[in-house]
Every structure is written in C-alpha cells, then in structure tokens.
Image 1: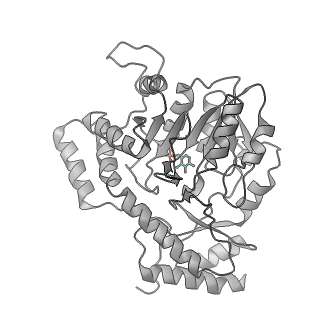
Image 2: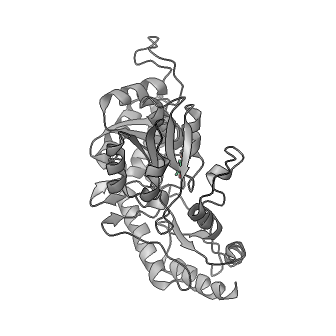
Image 3: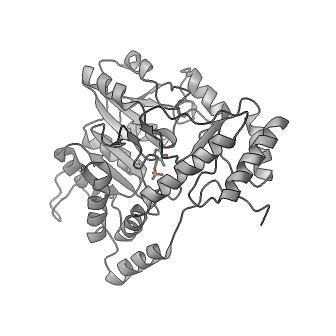
Length: 360
Ligand SMILES: *Cc1c(COP(=O)(O)O)cnc(C)c1O
C-alpha cells in the first residue's frame, strides 16, 4: 500500500446514507417532499435559523438567490474573478453584468480595498465568495454595502459552517448559496441550499424553483424546475450529521500539513476567522505545473483551483487586468486535506512536497 494514490477528494458514503436512500425509495415519494422540508429545517440551524430553500445545485442556488433579490438586466454585480465560473455565470444568466474585482493574495478572497472603485450608479450587489472555506472579510464588506445601499450575496459553496468571530458564513448578507456537490465538505449527490435574511425573497425562490407556483396549477410567476429530490435530501440530511466532525478533521489535517511543509506558502487564517478547508491550498513560487506533475507521479493527488481567471475565459473574454488574481492562477496548488486521510497519508504528503519542491 506504500505507493497507493492519495486522492485530492473522497466523499464519505456510509451505511447510514444507503439506509436513508432506501427508506425514500420504499416510500415511493421520489421528488421534492418531506425529506426536502426536513433538510431545509435542519440546515437552517447552521445559519442562525435563516430561511432555507433547497434546490438541485449550488449554481441554481446562486441563480435563484440573485433573481429572488430582483437582480436583472441593467444591473451590475461585483464579483471576484478567482473562483469557480458559476459565481459569474449566475450573475450573467440573470441578465446582469458581473464586474470583476481583484483578490487579496494572502486570503484569495475579494480585496475589500478595491470594491468601492468598482461601484457605479448601476451596481446593485456584491457577490462575495468564501474561497477554499475561508470567509471573505465580511466585516468590511458589510460596511461598504451599507454605505452604498448594495445587496450582498454570499457564494458559500465551499464554506459550510466557516465562521467569523463565531458568526457563520451565509448569515452576513441578504442571501447565500451553499453547494452539496460530492467534493464539498458535505454532499447530497448534487444539490444546493439558498439562505435568505428575509421571508419575501425566500417565497420568490420557492416559486422560481417550481414553475412559479406554490399551489398546484396556480402559477404566479414564470419559473423553472430546479427542485431537489427527496433522495438527494435524504443523503444531505445524513451527511449534515457528520459535518462538524468532518470539518474539525479537515482543520486538524491542515494544521498538521502547515506545521510540516517547507519552502511553499501555506494558508493564512486571519485572527477571529474559522477556515473549514474545503481546499488546503499552497502557493508554489515557481514551476507550479512541473511540481504538480511530479507530485501526481509520486501518488499525491493535487489540483489547481483555478487555472484561469474567470474574466479571461472565452465566456467572458475581458481585457481587464487583475494582477493578484493572475498571480494566484499561476502559483496555487491544492493538496489533499479531506477527512479520510490517515496520519501516514499526511506524513507522506508533507515529505513528498518537501523533497520534490527542491527539484523545481
Ligand atoms: C461548487 C461551487 C459552485 C457551484 O456549485 P454546484 O453545486 O457544483 O452547482 C459555485 N461556486 C463555488 C465557489 C463552488 O465551489
């Protein structure tokens, strides 16, 4: 087993998940039903009992959060460019324009010092990302949003129960979106959760989710079918029970790696912040891609999140220059940090990094 491959991510699907899914299959209720309602109620305990609306993906959660807050054509929404494309796609799909702002290279999150320069009379919202599981600087961002009367949407797809001074990600803005994609800190297969500060946009999101109707065949608005199924909700409910324990394991693994890695830049955790390490991401000062290949050949899974600035993708093709975002795309590398790693795995990851980094 010495040279087995250590994967970058590994969802934990236990017998409890199989039991929960079987129970739904036996019930005959396969689409959105009582399991979805229970999942929404249970997830709300993670976000100070805010209104929760379950949907079929994190991307749908972002899209409906924006639509339900009234964002659309003619509006501008400030977003980081160092993120998964869904952050900007969801804005563009409402008809609004994503306005890209650079990051703070130390935290990889949107740089609050650069937000005000990007505000125009058309700016309606700031959509922040809590990248890799570290919350963005919400204290400063909430202040800026108040001053300019802007909405805040939190892309919390990677930040289940990440905290700032004890306050959970997803409770700082007007709305937030979580993802339950298999590699995230908890999964439902595919799935997402929208979290709202207020009741009315939550009601709208429930309408958008299901053809614009609350009561059957009484369609109030034009809507989608973005429902979560009871099968997925049952997986999500089971996973939720393990979330805090798994987050703690990720944090312990991250501390172990940071104490052992040499000659690479390890993650920063600002004081008062709790990082849930969806990814453990280092910076490799030079020849990152060669280093990544060598690590893979040595059996240490690794991946670049993200190799391309979102505003430079063919889908946005912007000429804008964001130097810190560019630096991040050229130097970051994520290492395994998931809860299934053993002490031996961690030791092997650290030893392999420390020995191969001298070769590049
Ligand atoms: C995973 C992710 C999403 C999208 O979630 P899906 O469930 O895959 O649709 C959005 N934003 C970020 C930052 C993500 O990591």
